[in-house]
Figure: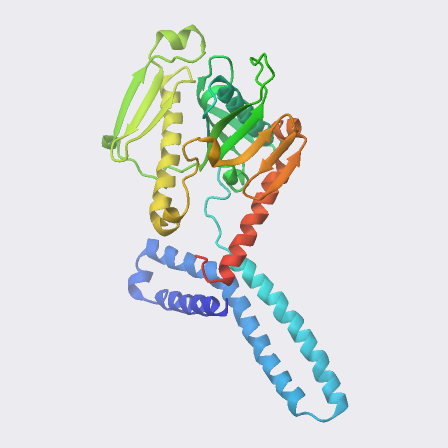
Length: 360
């Protein structure tokens, strides 16, 4: 950790020197960038320098303890040693936390995509359950959920539902929900009482601002078609649904739930920007992205991150090896304990990565 702090101090000094260069001073955008980067390091460097001062004092006290013969002075030195050691521990804890990489997206709104996986009609019903779980969770936190696009299942639920959750910290709280969710229960259509296993995939994307993802109109192919989802006679008679294809990446975004082309186009663009932002960030961190699995995999049962077992009233979070009960309450949006446990596990992992020198 001390080596990393030393490197950050050197960068802080280098940025300070850049602030005095004529070419930086004369360029407002560059000046803001350098000043912002230096300000971001200010507290960490100040803490590091305090730690360096404490370590210097500790070295002096230890030297005194080795050489001093006077009992009274030794007693005073021992008391000072203990005080400085406590201060050292406090500063090191503060600096360790300060070194944890901050996710730039953590306070953003999110776009959530829930899709039925294996299991047919039951998978679509389960996707509907997950949609309700997240919207109820958002409601409990005072956030707002907004449907972007739906593809209903034949007997209920959704083959696919895309929606946004608007609220500060939504991405920080929900980003760990990405993955394959598995359900084990007796479907309502099962007369023999046999337990079925089905899956649904969840992808949580930070919503991108237009300034973060710039899309040139010539890169888009925009098509209109008649909406197929429930929406009254209007959407069935006019081509209000929108399909947008981003030609350079091949990404496709659709929306058909609103009555006007303009509204559908706006929502489809929000989803497209979120996907492009995710792709950009993965490319910027290619080493990390290459080492980790994709968010949702293929939807196969073996790739689950969480299992909802109805007969045993149990939810198993496989990434943590933890079990939670009161499944109906969880599906009603009471997922705070799971969210908190996943956030704590991430914090511990990041702290460990700092200790092994793997943190960004």
